[in-house]
Length: 282
Length: 116
Image (tube, rainbow over all chains, first blue to last red; front, side, top):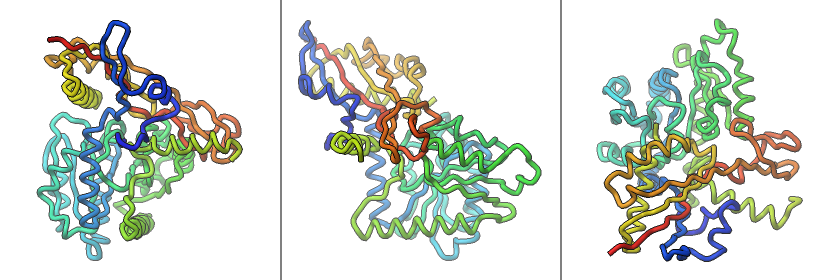
């Protein structure tokens, strides 16, 4: 959300600014101030600084979100083993407690910073900023942020990352995108993990999971993967390579790369709405 | 329960606005929330007193304006109101739509009282 260009003015609140401007007096003389700022503007400001910092160092940053136990760390281990020799990878791990995940990643020979959030259910842009002090971004091509395992809260906080990847393990049920729409709407790729178990689970249909994802108007690719058997990992690495290429193209053109759904999404609302008013039939 | 973090962010912004206008007391805080923002209005209301205690907004009333979800169909160009887990076009049923509103998480307006 930007507070300077007016992108937070949507069809729903435009009248507030048009009626009597930003400042007015109530009948009993009190001061009423129309603000129209994102409620998380402090976080969003820090996220933007993080993003600029990543872009100066040409590091593509991927926010990995899912339930606890869906296999984020196992997928990262398999990813590092396979593409670590070609790409310099770093990981920021978010958990309520323990260094266990960071230790697993370090055992694969890549830098990993553990953020322990205590009781906080998500990472925010300030926590990621603090973790960056301990990472040498100049040596990285790709940084994964493994968010706190939670299908609700992490989706509301911009970290300054470029892409969201949401994992759905086959033991969780194929209707999770319908049940947790905010999280799955934000996915730039949905990974169906532990796919090796599909042969013994008769109640998870990948096509159904994809159908629920499309119901959220989300065109993201859906990939079945198994960190254990390596099934589908080639497609996952292909997606990462494609996003790295896209990122470098954006950098070359001086354009920032944002996740498809981001807090500044209302800029798009306003533009689409104005366009629709001007050309109602397309 | 990230609603407490959201409340703390609201209080920080409101405190800054009150200071800019030399106001000591915040009377009302109006916010806009869409169902796709990921913030639950009722939880926000219950977390608010914890975040506002001992601040200029301690006595403030939090007024939440809940906005509907509206999408624009990329195919038939119809605008329709939808539910949170089905953002498909209400007219032709196509899933390729663009969100017009429903993900708002905005501080709309504050009412301040200057006390000397």
